[in-house]
Length: 259
Image 1 (cartoon, rainbow, N blue to C red):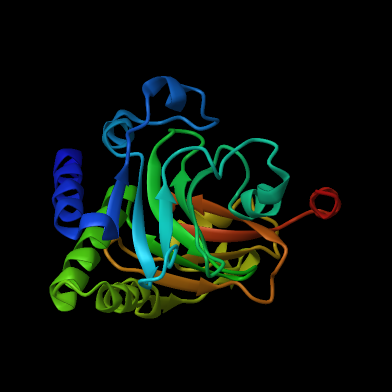
Image 2 (image 1 turned 30 degrees about the vertical axis):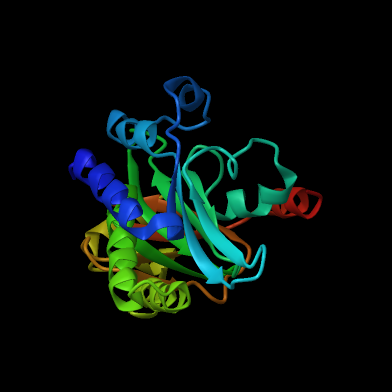
């Protein structure tokens, strides 16, 4: 994906939106070098230009009567040793496997998959509670293009009314998740001998009770519910196409209970 196009579309959309969509200043290479995950050049090019976005999601005319959702590409949600994020970081796969970009006011957590081997940044995932998750976009640039399109659609519908904009944007943004295709998960013990080679390869080194799901080809939002597992960490394979829920061992559970 052309990062320059993503940057241009975000800037054009922000210019049209006024203070309903604001862009954060870019992030320096020095700051990114200090992160606990590698940052590929294609991602750096985007983050040097735009460090995050703020979208108005609640509006009244009263002083202080507005709220913004802040999608931040920096390290605010990724501080090593941040006890308030320990459970969520382990749930997303542990340090070095992901990069959080948003903690939603409704309780969602959004992160980008980071391949610990290659350092590549892959699909964007969202989870709300302990069991269900959505692959929301194929990449961070893809997510940002979707958001820009949602903002432009909401602006056109609002015709200058910020109240209408908030409702229209919320409807469009919510559809990315409510319209997601549902996929089923199977036990790793079954996947190893099943017909799906991607699942079989991913399940090879997983415990029998782990659950794995093939999310299918890129280009569509996909939801998986891993219930009855509730205390587990996500693990991603095949460029984010395969998602696994791996139960935590007793030591991890005790450590998280003490966090």
